[in-house]
Structures are given as structure tokens and as C-alpha cells.
Length: 150
Image (cartoon, rainbow, N blue to C red; front, top):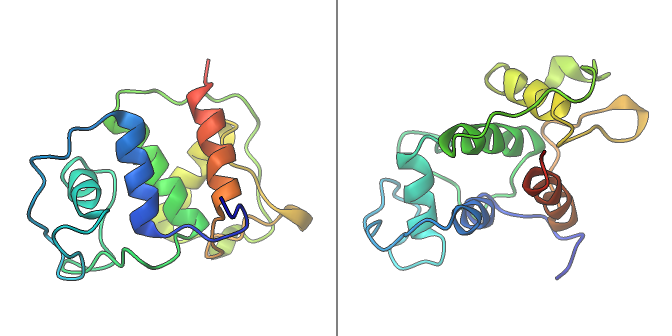
């Protein structure tokens, strides 16, 4: 399992596609030049892009093998919840992280949404670490909390 191993963007959207039970058989072509047809994540990436769950790092590149950042994960999870028709609750008070200013503008609302839903939290010293990478263990914890939302 390698819980301390980082998870890639391609792995993350593959997990989301499997969690949703998506039928990926119709997603055979790729919109991204760095996603090879037939790769294990190709259908999931195309499904995520078409359903507004994930965007590429540019119009033509997805960076499927790049480690996912914590802020990218927050954005994709927030978009996934919307795509699945799930309203995320506000169960905890908003945290103003010591490194709030480092959270990218595109991700700020998603980070707040995930944090106030109790799905994602900061690290030591009240840091969110937005450009830090997410490990498999962190993703498992996030998904466990997401699946058990009440």
C-alpha cells in the first residue's frame, strides 16, 4: 500500500472515478496530449474533465504522473461532490491557516469548503501546505471521511 507514498493526479482521479462507479468505457480518446490512450488513468481523466471534476495544468496537458497538491485535491474533491449532487455540510468552524496567503486564488473556496466540512485539515503549526503533496494515507483518510458524511 505504501501509505507515505505521494499520490499522482492520474491516480487521484482514477480513485474518484471508481468511487463514483463511473462507466469509463466510452472515454477512449484523450483531450490531453500527455495522457496516452490505453493508460490505466486515461478514461478516468477524460471522465473527470468532461464532468467538471478536474482540469489540466494547461489546455493541452493534464500532468497525470505529477504528484497532486493538497489544494488541487481540495478543488477536485469539491468539484466531485458537486458533480455527484452532494452538498458538503459545514460541521467545523473556518480555520485561518498561517499560510492562507499561499493558497492559490483558484483553490481558496475549495480549501475552505473541504475544511469546514471536516474533510481536510491543516498540518502542524496551523499550516495548510497548499502546494505540498498528498500521500496515499492522507487521501484514504479524506475519502473515508467523505464516504461517511452524514
